[in-house]
Length: 182
Ligand SMILES: [Zn+2]
Ligand SMILES: [Zn+2]
Image (cartoon, rainbow, N blue to C red; front, side):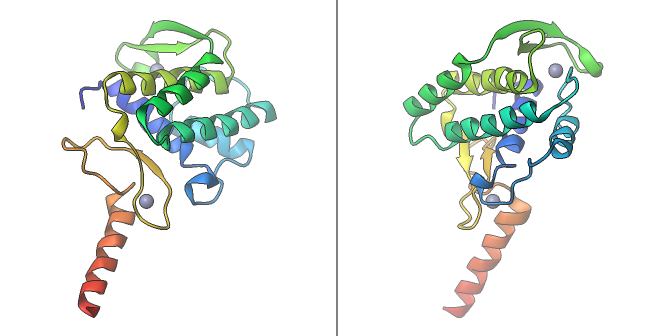
């Protein structure tokens, strides 16, 4: 994929965020402020102040809005859904080298809440992906009992499982057993 480190990082963050939702088949992994703080620390989201219940509510709503972009039936629908998400987001581009990272652009406005911060930076990353004609790389896992989303970064866009070590391996074992039974 022709994307820089920062873009890849933002895409990984939006995938992680969406996959905390029970809409993707697992348990809810964003139920309280402790889990929200853990998410922010794991993903090294910068400049986050004191978090409250309002932040939790915003981020929980945002993950569903992002999920709808991943599960859009076609590219025009994904564009409409992402534009809706972005239309409620104040965006102020700013160059930064925080925490020793290479110079990159942040999009969230000064004083943004965590929800606004994530919708700006992750929303713009997805916008670039769509502009590059790479919408098809936004995928949902093909394992029948898994609804996790992922960004297919493979050269030939051939990835079908959210994680080759878990779902991929599980499905290969199941296929092997089915063949042996046949
Ligand atoms: Zn940054
Ligand atoms: Zn999976």
